[in-house]
Length: 180
Image (cartoon, rainbow, N blue to C red; front, side):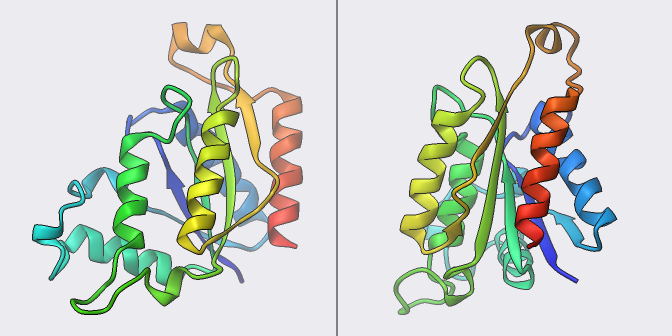
């Protein structure tokens, strides 16, 4: 059974990307995977003054990443970039886990990561490309299949995003690819 840690880049309680992550999670669980959701909203801003010992929320996040076989990040883009909360979480993840030891921790090296995002007209694809570059730099192994989903204007008006059949099919294909 694969253990997958789901990381949602939006901190909003009812975010569209959380909706997408829940859809993905449902499919992964149906195919026998174990899915856990990380809570990056509780992480303090990265600050070397509080790095050792790391705050408990940072330790919990690191333990979740270490226990997972892989990560699945579902995120919007903000101004064609990585959302601040997600960038902060990744910055904490890239830092040493003990004083005097430099570089990213071994447990993130070559860990597979799938990337999905939902956004406006550009379907979060620019932000996903930046995210892939960052993850590669950090030593993780992002999949080349970046899936961006366009959120219809009506969803922004109603606050509710329902994936259409084409979007569900793309997600199903991405789930199949990830589990292979």
